[in-house]
Image (cartoon, rainbow, N blue to C red):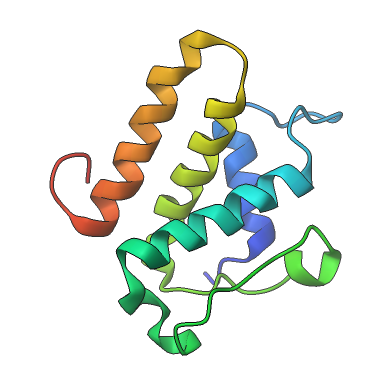
Length: 118
């Protein structure tokens, strides 16, 4: 299956349990998390962006961007979604979500560079 940017948003919503409209996290906010995930991923694993000539993709919540293919090897799709979930969980006002957010960050990082959490 070829993943899209829209799929990343949908999966992030599923993990955040935000699947009914009106959404708690709008598309623009989730896409911002995707852009941050891509930037942090490139910092840790620039080799994943070789096929993009090391350029960092940038997305908006426009329909054209949502239909674009996931830009790096799709085996990292779940890791990017983990980072997107973590960004939203950290932004939540509830202190109880901090542990969950850290777990998603550790999962993202572990999957990218190996070791614990991967």
